[in-house]
Amino acid sequence: MAVRIRLKKLGRKHRPFYRVCAMDARAPRDGRILEELGTYDPMVPYTDARAVLNGERVQYWLGVGAQPTEKVKVLIKKYGPKGTHLAMQKAALDQLAQDRRRRAPALELIEAAQAAAYPAEEEAAPADEQA
Image 1 (cartoon, rainbow, N blue to C red):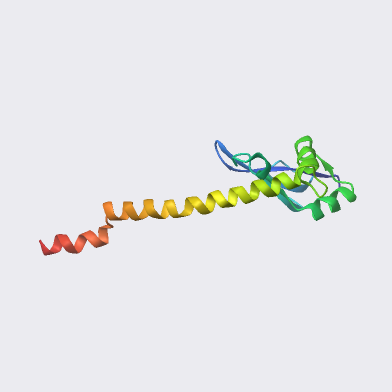
Image 2: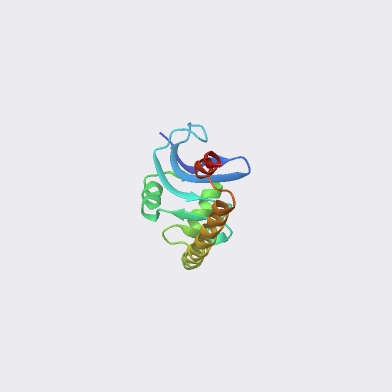
């Protein structure tokens, strides 16, 4: 069986998300996988935080003869076990985590304001019965 390391497309229309997978070369693009090796999200704002790979498993599959596709070959070169962008990837992932932590309290405030402006129907129903 010829094994390829390639991207499996997930997500929705205009919001792609990919998994880096070891697959039989004859399997369809989104078909059955042998093992998931990482993820690639092209919608992440920080370029170096887009790909996250399991370097140990990537090395294993390359060692047993799996052939990566062109795009995956570039991702492995940058973010694989001996990648050229590993330090930048770590910094980008840290920055992304900080952005998400900063954004969470703001979302809670927005939800609280919406709840105050538009009370739930259960809360509004007893007030209507009293009138």
